[in-house]
Length: 354
Image (cartoon, rainbow, N blue to C red):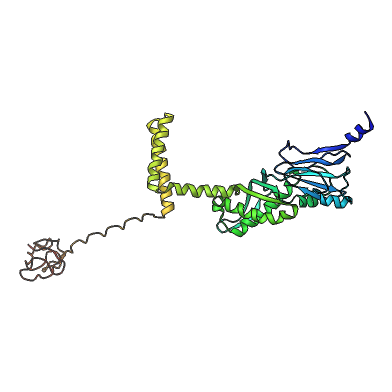
């Protein structure tokens, strides 16, 4: 091998990157101390941006397309290298390929419960999780603010921790400011997700990133709160307590028939179901029946008195049981009071005459 072949082997003629991963954000082209040939071919695929860095300084940026590296296509690097009169010579520069496609299905979640104030339950703790998607909006800002001078590839795992922490903080603010009741959170996932995404993007601008979507898959409440919600739901499902009692009785008969306990078991189960339904009905309606007032005893007609001896007479008696005197017809046999001539009823006690 001659000297010319050695020199030629140290020159890079084609610069390109085929992404074989799904989580690489920035890839540094492996130059291995070889010089890039002026006039070499640069291929930037869709969803990529190529950036040349000269001695730590960001130089030229190439969007998707095919380029021949010349002083005309590399004005910034030409200035940094002080090339004059179009002098074409090999040069050394770091080349970074930045993925600008969307990185989807990134997971986020609350490591610790988030406190919120609810109008119905008071202070409650919630947990939430979901997914988000992001992409590189400003490749130069990403290299300058995040990658820096590390000189290595950048993966999604290198920055997703920061995005997750910002997401939880933004979601907490969204729930607090929306004042949505805990019972209605599930019906407002889309609104909360959009609010969180809009709140996060200004914080990601300095990193050169943009949040494309933020999806809330679930917001869970403490176990005791969920049990209370289940009880409330059960009472709403019960509805008419009378129909519920009939349903309990029918269920008791069905269970007795299925387990073979016979009519005795059916009676016990049905009685328990009816009793429970009655107790629930009384508890819900608060209607307790008061005992009916006792009927007043019917007044007995007052006994009269004998006009001869003054002893009491048996009601309706025509003769005195003491002295045997005949009682006057014009005296009430009930109360002994004088009667009005021709009266059919006593004016004093109402006893029928005759």
